Image (cartoon, rainbow, N blue to C red; front, side, top):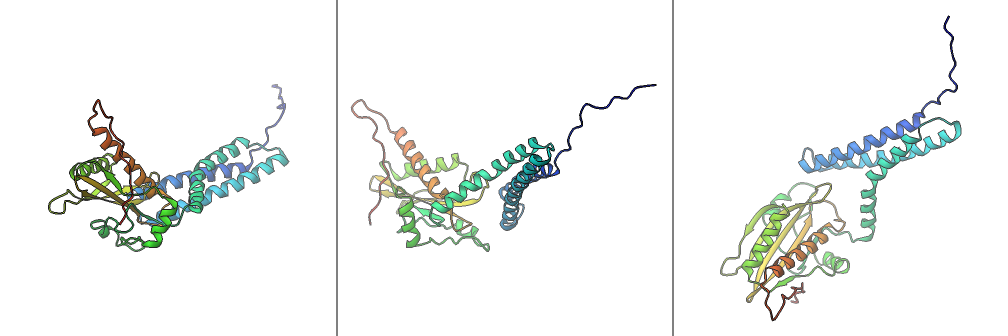
Length: 281
Protein backbone atom coordinates (compact mmCIF):
# COMPACT_ATOMS: atom_id res chain seq x y z
CA UNK A 1 0.00 0.00 0.00
CA UNK A 2 1.48 3.37 -1.08
CA UNK A 3 2.19 5.92 1.60
CA UNK A 4 0.86 9.47 1.26
CA UNK A 5 3.08 12.38 2.22
CA UNK A 6 1.60 15.73 3.11
CA UNK A 7 3.22 18.84 1.60
CA UNK A 8 5.50 20.66 4.05
CA UNK A 9 3.60 23.84 3.33
CA UNK A 10 0.76 25.10 1.14
CA UNK A 11 1.20 28.07 -1.18
CA UNK A 12 -0.93 31.08 -0.40
CA UNK A 13 -3.39 32.04 -3.15
CA UNK A 14 -2.58 34.86 -5.56
CA UNK A 15 -4.35 38.10 -4.74
CA UNK A 16 -7.18 38.71 -7.19
CA UNK A 17 -6.63 42.46 -6.81
CA UNK A 18 -3.02 42.06 -7.95
CA UNK A 19 -4.21 40.18 -11.04
CA UNK A 20 -6.77 42.87 -11.79
CA UNK A 21 -4.13 45.61 -11.42
CA UNK A 22 -1.86 43.85 -13.92
CA UNK A 23 -4.70 43.19 -16.39
CA UNK A 24 -5.90 46.80 -16.26
CA UNK A 25 -2.34 48.02 -16.86
CA UNK A 26 -1.93 45.76 -19.90
CA UNK A 27 -5.31 46.89 -21.23
CA UNK A 28 -4.36 50.56 -20.82
CA UNK A 29 -1.14 50.24 -22.81
CA UNK A 30 -2.96 48.36 -25.58
CA UNK A 31 -5.65 51.06 -25.70
CA UNK A 32 -3.01 53.80 -25.91
CA UNK A 33 -1.32 52.06 -28.84
CA UNK A 34 -4.70 51.60 -30.57
CA UNK A 35 -5.54 55.30 -30.16
CA UNK A 36 -2.17 56.30 -31.65
CA UNK A 37 -2.78 54.04 -34.66
CA UNK A 38 -6.28 55.49 -35.08
CA UNK A 39 -4.97 59.07 -35.16
CA UNK A 40 -1.95 58.40 -37.40
CA UNK A 41 -3.85 56.43 -40.03
CA UNK A 42 -7.15 58.27 -39.77
CA UNK A 43 -9.33 55.22 -39.15
CA UNK A 44 -11.79 57.26 -37.07
CA UNK A 45 -12.56 60.90 -36.39
CA UNK A 46 -10.49 62.81 -33.86
CA UNK A 47 -13.06 62.70 -31.05
CA UNK A 48 -13.36 58.88 -30.88
CA UNK A 49 -9.58 58.58 -31.02
CA UNK A 50 -9.13 61.03 -28.14
CA UNK A 51 -11.88 59.29 -26.18
CA UNK A 52 -9.95 56.03 -26.56
CA UNK A 53 -6.71 57.71 -25.46
CA UNK A 54 -8.15 59.38 -22.36
CA UNK A 55 -10.04 56.21 -21.51
CA UNK A 56 -6.70 54.37 -21.56
CA UNK A 57 -5.19 56.94 -19.20
CA UNK A 58 -8.15 56.57 -16.84
CA UNK A 59 -7.67 52.82 -16.94
CA UNK A 60 -4.01 53.26 -15.99
CA UNK A 61 -4.98 55.43 -13.02
CA UNK A 62 -7.54 52.84 -11.95
CA UNK A 63 -4.86 50.15 -12.22
CA UNK A 64 -2.64 52.12 -9.82
CA UNK A 65 -5.48 52.38 -7.28
CA UNK A 66 -6.21 48.66 -7.54
CA UNK A 67 -2.49 47.90 -7.17
CA UNK A 68 -2.37 49.91 -3.95
CA UNK A 69 -5.41 48.08 -2.64
CA UNK A 70 -3.75 44.77 -3.58
CA UNK A 71 -0.62 45.75 -1.69
CA UNK A 72 -2.66 46.44 1.45
CA UNK A 73 -4.45 43.09 1.07
CA UNK A 74 -1.17 41.19 0.66
CA UNK A 75 0.28 42.97 3.68
CA UNK A 76 -2.65 41.88 5.80
CA UNK A 77 -3.34 38.30 4.71
CA UNK A 78 0.01 37.24 3.27
CA UNK A 79 -1.31 36.27 -0.16
CA UNK A 80 0.96 36.28 -3.21
CA UNK A 81 1.03 38.75 -6.10
CA UNK A 82 3.73 41.34 -5.45
CA UNK A 83 5.35 40.67 -8.82
CA UNK A 84 2.05 41.44 -10.56
CA UNK A 85 1.69 44.65 -8.59
CA UNK A 86 5.20 45.79 -9.52
CA UNK A 87 4.59 44.93 -13.18
CA UNK A 88 1.35 46.92 -13.16
CA UNK A 89 3.03 49.95 -11.58
CA UNK A 90 5.87 49.81 -14.12
CA UNK A 91 3.48 49.67 -17.09
CA UNK A 92 1.36 52.49 -15.68
CA UNK A 93 4.44 54.66 -15.14
CA UNK A 94 5.37 54.22 -18.81
CA UNK A 95 1.82 54.99 -19.97
CA UNK A 96 1.36 58.08 -17.78
CA UNK A 97 4.87 59.61 -17.96
CA UNK A 98 4.40 61.55 -21.21
CA UNK A 99 0.83 62.76 -20.46
CA UNK A 100 2.06 64.03 -17.07
CA UNK A 101 4.87 65.89 -18.81
CA UNK A 102 2.36 67.43 -21.24
CA UNK A 103 0.20 68.47 -18.31
CA UNK A 104 3.13 70.32 -16.76
CA UNK A 105 3.82 71.99 -20.11
CA UNK A 106 0.19 73.05 -20.33
CA UNK A 107 0.43 74.81 -16.98
CA UNK A 108 3.72 76.49 -17.88
CA UNK A 109 3.16 77.58 -21.49
CA UNK A 110 0.57 80.02 -22.91
CA UNK A 111 -2.60 78.61 -24.44
CA UNK A 112 -1.73 79.48 -28.05
CA UNK A 113 -1.49 77.24 -31.10
CA UNK A 114 -0.36 79.55 -33.94
CA UNK A 115 3.34 80.56 -33.94
CA UNK A 116 5.08 82.72 -36.54
CA UNK A 117 8.30 84.65 -37.03
CA UNK A 118 6.30 87.61 -38.38
CA UNK A 119 3.17 88.38 -36.32
CA UNK A 120 2.53 91.59 -38.27
CA UNK A 121 2.32 89.87 -41.66
CA UNK A 122 2.42 86.11 -41.04
CA UNK A 123 2.85 83.67 -43.96
CA UNK A 124 -0.59 82.75 -45.28
CA UNK A 125 -2.30 79.40 -45.39
CA UNK A 126 -3.69 79.23 -48.93
CA UNK A 127 -3.74 75.56 -49.93
CA UNK A 128 -3.73 74.52 -46.27
CA UNK A 129 -6.85 76.58 -45.56
CA UNK A 130 -8.89 74.09 -47.61
CA UNK A 131 -7.84 71.34 -45.19
CA UNK A 132 -9.25 73.20 -42.18
CA UNK A 133 -12.94 73.17 -43.02
CA UNK A 134 -14.05 70.39 -40.65
CA UNK A 135 -15.96 71.14 -37.47
CA UNK A 136 -13.72 71.55 -34.43
CA UNK A 137 -10.62 72.42 -36.47
CA UNK A 138 -8.79 75.68 -35.70
CA UNK A 139 -9.28 78.42 -38.26
CA UNK A 140 -6.58 79.20 -40.81
CA UNK A 141 -6.80 82.91 -39.94
CA UNK A 142 -3.92 84.07 -37.73
CA UNK A 143 -4.89 84.38 -34.07
CA UNK A 144 -4.01 88.10 -33.86
CA UNK A 145 -2.11 90.49 -31.63
CA UNK A 146 -3.08 88.83 -28.36
CA UNK A 147 -1.48 85.60 -29.52
CA UNK A 148 1.53 87.56 -30.80
CA UNK A 149 2.07 89.12 -27.38
CA UNK A 150 1.78 85.74 -25.65
CA UNK A 151 4.28 84.33 -28.15
CA UNK A 152 6.73 87.18 -27.58
CA UNK A 153 6.77 86.51 -23.84
CA UNK A 154 7.09 82.72 -24.10
CA UNK A 155 9.31 82.42 -27.18
CA UNK A 156 11.30 85.65 -27.64
CA UNK A 157 13.81 83.95 -29.98
CA UNK A 158 11.22 83.23 -32.69
CA UNK A 159 12.17 85.94 -35.20
CA UNK A 160 12.52 86.47 -38.93
CA UNK A 161 15.60 84.80 -40.35
CA UNK A 162 17.93 86.96 -42.47
CA UNK A 163 20.32 85.12 -44.79
CA UNK A 164 23.26 86.38 -46.83
CA UNK A 165 22.29 84.29 -49.85
CA UNK A 166 20.01 84.93 -52.86
CA UNK A 167 16.32 84.25 -52.47
CA UNK A 168 16.44 81.24 -54.83
CA UNK A 169 19.15 79.57 -52.75
CA UNK A 170 17.27 80.22 -49.50
CA UNK A 171 14.13 78.72 -51.02
CA UNK A 172 16.00 75.60 -52.19
CA UNK A 173 17.52 75.06 -48.73
CA UNK A 174 14.13 75.39 -47.05
CA UNK A 175 12.52 72.96 -49.52
CA UNK A 176 15.30 70.41 -49.03
CA UNK A 177 14.87 70.53 -45.26
CA UNK A 178 11.11 70.10 -45.58
CA UNK A 179 11.68 67.02 -47.74
CA UNK A 180 14.28 65.70 -45.27
CA UNK A 181 11.72 65.92 -42.48
CA UNK A 182 9.21 64.03 -44.66
CA UNK A 183 6.54 66.67 -44.22
CA UNK A 184 3.67 66.38 -46.67
CA UNK A 185 4.10 69.25 -49.15
CA UNK A 186 0.70 70.63 -50.16
CA UNK A 187 1.95 73.52 -52.33
CA UNK A 188 5.29 74.95 -53.38
CA UNK A 189 5.99 78.06 -55.44
CA UNK A 190 9.54 79.00 -56.30
CA UNK A 191 10.56 82.69 -56.36
CA UNK A 192 9.53 84.14 -59.71
CA UNK A 193 9.75 87.68 -61.15
CA UNK A 194 8.59 90.31 -60.53
CA UNK A 195 8.10 89.85 -56.76
CA UNK A 196 10.37 86.78 -56.42
CA UNK A 197 8.60 85.46 -53.33
CA UNK A 198 8.87 81.75 -52.66
CA UNK A 199 6.24 79.85 -50.65
CA UNK A 200 6.06 76.33 -49.21
CA UNK A 201 2.99 74.91 -47.51
CA UNK A 202 3.34 71.53 -45.79
CA UNK A 203 1.81 69.32 -43.11
CA UNK A 204 3.94 68.12 -40.19
CA UNK A 205 3.08 65.57 -37.51
CA UNK A 206 3.62 65.58 -33.75
CA UNK A 207 6.11 62.89 -32.64
CA UNK A 208 3.87 60.44 -30.75
CA UNK A 209 0.18 60.93 -31.49
CA UNK A 210 0.82 62.22 -34.99
CA UNK A 211 -1.51 65.23 -34.78
CA UNK A 212 -1.38 67.30 -37.98
CA UNK A 213 0.21 70.75 -37.71
CA UNK A 214 0.40 73.05 -40.73
CA UNK A 215 3.56 74.88 -41.77
CA UNK A 216 3.90 77.81 -44.16
CA UNK A 217 7.32 79.12 -45.21
CA UNK A 218 7.79 82.42 -47.06
CA UNK A 219 11.10 83.40 -48.66
CA UNK A 220 11.43 87.02 -49.79
CA UNK A 221 14.32 88.95 -51.38
CA UNK A 222 16.18 91.60 -49.41
CA UNK A 223 18.41 93.19 -52.02
CA UNK A 224 20.99 90.53 -52.86
CA UNK A 225 20.13 88.67 -49.64
CA UNK A 226 16.92 87.01 -48.45
CA UNK A 227 14.54 86.71 -45.52
CA UNK A 228 12.71 83.61 -44.35
CA UNK A 229 9.48 83.70 -42.35
CA UNK A 230 7.87 80.58 -40.94
CA UNK A 231 4.45 79.90 -39.50
CA UNK A 232 3.43 76.68 -37.74
CA UNK A 233 -0.09 76.12 -36.45
CA UNK A 234 -1.94 73.24 -34.82
CA UNK A 235 -5.22 72.10 -36.33
CA UNK A 236 -6.63 70.93 -33.01
CA UNK A 237 -6.66 72.17 -29.41
CA UNK A 238 -6.27 75.64 -27.97
CA UNK A 239 -2.70 75.00 -26.78
CA UNK A 240 0.07 73.36 -28.79
CA UNK A 241 2.21 72.68 -25.67
CA UNK A 242 5.22 74.29 -27.35
CA UNK A 243 5.40 71.98 -30.37
CA UNK A 244 5.10 74.70 -33.03
CA UNK A 245 7.74 76.94 -31.46
CA UNK A 246 10.11 73.99 -31.17
CA UNK A 247 9.51 73.11 -34.82
CA UNK A 248 10.23 76.66 -36.01
CA UNK A 249 13.34 77.01 -33.84
CA UNK A 250 14.77 73.73 -35.11
CA UNK A 251 14.03 74.63 -38.74
CA UNK A 252 15.72 78.03 -38.31
CA UNK A 253 18.80 76.38 -36.83
CA UNK A 254 18.95 73.85 -39.68
CA UNK A 255 18.56 76.54 -42.36
CA UNK A 256 21.33 78.53 -40.74
CA UNK A 257 23.59 75.49 -40.62
CA UNK A 258 22.86 74.47 -44.22
CA UNK A 259 23.55 77.95 -45.57
CA UNK A 260 26.64 78.39 -43.39
CA UNK A 261 28.13 75.04 -44.39
CA UNK A 262 27.56 75.77 -48.07
CA UNK A 263 29.66 78.96 -47.97
CA UNK A 264 33.17 78.48 -49.36
CA UNK A 265 35.88 78.94 -46.76
CA UNK A 266 38.81 81.26 -47.49
CA UNK A 267 42.23 81.55 -45.91
CA UNK A 268 41.67 85.11 -44.87
CA UNK A 269 38.22 84.76 -43.41
CA UNK A 270 36.28 81.87 -41.91
CA UNK A 271 32.60 81.47 -42.76
CA UNK A 272 30.50 83.87 -40.72
CA UNK A 273 27.65 82.42 -38.77
CA UNK A 274 24.27 83.58 -39.99
CA UNK A 275 22.15 85.01 -37.21
CA UNK A 276 18.40 85.21 -36.88
CA UNK A 277 17.36 88.85 -36.64
CA UNK A 278 14.07 90.56 -36.07
CA UNK A 279 12.59 92.65 -38.84
CA UNK A 280 11.42 96.03 -37.65
CA UNK A 281 8.57 97.57 -39.59
